[in-house]
Image (cartoon, rainbow, N blue to C red; front, side, top):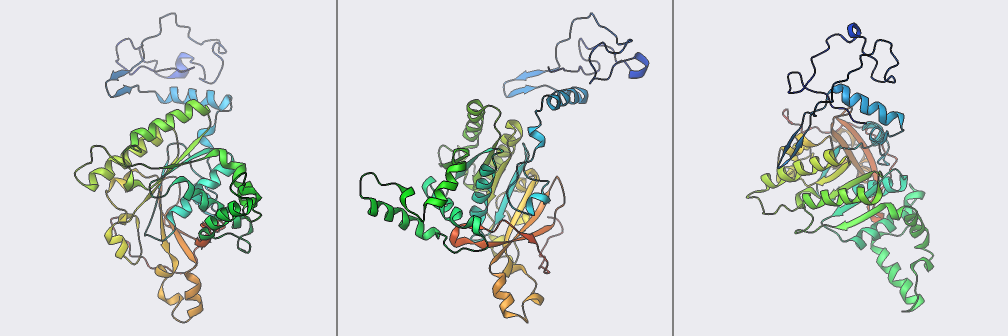
Length: 392
């Protein structure tokens, strides 16, 4: 049931009641008629307050309408909007309130080589394997089979970390696939017959139906078409939650092409945020750094390329930096071994967090040869360089 309140003074609206207790109006959560003095109206229900225009409809709802509808959803167990979808990285999940929620947009930034795609794909894998949502991973830089090869490498070591013995490096995955074909012959060969591949393939098989991979196109993968994919997912899967990953934001095409990148990025980031809000999906997008960010000692959120709208529209901004490059010199100048060890870690800084604490620095050990991070991270203990602008 959906109720719609009339604005005071709108055509057809009832006179305001004033104080509810004076008129004996029942608790909106109680059964109608349960109060002896509940007013019973015989007047016809007024038309809802609504404007239908070419670009869409506008329909204000009173806070009471929203509260009543929320109560109905809770009473029927429809609380999916309040159940976070974990990213599978500790303590990052704790920092962002347990995970992602419908309508949120997360931006993952960093310089080249810091592991943005590695982390995003691992997050997508974690969500799919967790069973709470389906995942759509749209990648403009790699095709679907390349992403699958990275998943195979990841799955070969993930359950054994921090040990990597027996894992298959990403550069060796293709060789193992080709080796399976050569052993079995041209007809009837099966990847699962390869003993090195089989454990990883079995793990992918457990969540593979929930993880969808798509190679982005510079003609077809527009914001509008991504919205259509989300809408079609709802038609095909019903109430199943969907999380969308875009790798990466500056590659999303706009047709016709805007005159400059600032306008293009503004359009894309506003469009993706609207998809997240209007379709009720969490959305994670990788964002490239600008030239100043690539030269800076430490990348910050104001170094993300294209438009200030990036910082305004995002609910959460995560920035990746190599630990070796941003740790304060006092931590390494007297200990060369410590300096070398820092090269094995990436720092994830929570630069913006609408739902909780920001300016949080977390670190994760990288295993890039296996296309993954150790998901058991920790808070950074060492002092870091700042290079923060006052107006960021």
